[in-house]
Amino acid sequence: MPRAPGVLEKAAALLRALSAAESGATTTDLATTTGQPRATTHRLLESLAAEGLADRDPATGRWYLGPETYVLGVAAAARYDLTNEARASVHRLAKETGESAFFSVRRGDEVVVLLREDGDFPIRSYVLYESARFPLGVVSAGVAILAHLPARDVDAFLARADPTAEWGPQHAEALVRERLAATRRTGWSLNPGLVVEGSWGMAAAVFDKAGRPEWALTLTGVEQRFRADRQPVLGRLLLEEAHRLSRLA
Figure (tube, rainbow, N blue to C red):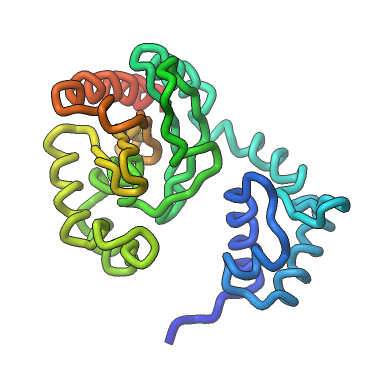
């Protein structure tokens, strides 16, 4: 029988939910997102606020990540974060392609967007934004990372995850595996409007010193900007920047 989540796991779930709430969230919102009773959610939020890990706007009642999370993030950045180095890659990708460029990090079974920069093409895709979270295998960054994990890890993830419930039948296991195989062949992943129709994305994985795919660089835009004859060009640019960052990791 699965073990019931403890207090730390419940608190961690709230912090992850807050990190994805760009405009803050109410207690009820957070209770719904984490699947916890509202009273429990409120009690945990008050405890997190007392430690500076959560903060509540007195005017709106909405909750946000607290200032202590910034301090912790800065302290951890030296070991885990490539963000400063990635800024240059994201800038070059946006400037050279005209598309929106992103840098994401793997966190367990999810990818989290850390950086975004828009190119000069006037029509944009807004599926991704800083702090957005998606399961592995859904957006192109998650596909790129999942494709380069060991086979046993891929099998274990697909056995416990069912993205079709939230993201539709186009994310059934057999179809995800097809996209993983295609990514291994080319080196870069392609999301042909599977999250939002007409919004396409491509990504390349960035590896740590042990050869694990822990980050990804992404380009997104409208469908006509990702036509078949342009994909190899975009893929080459993504791979060049991904290889550069992997050498720095």
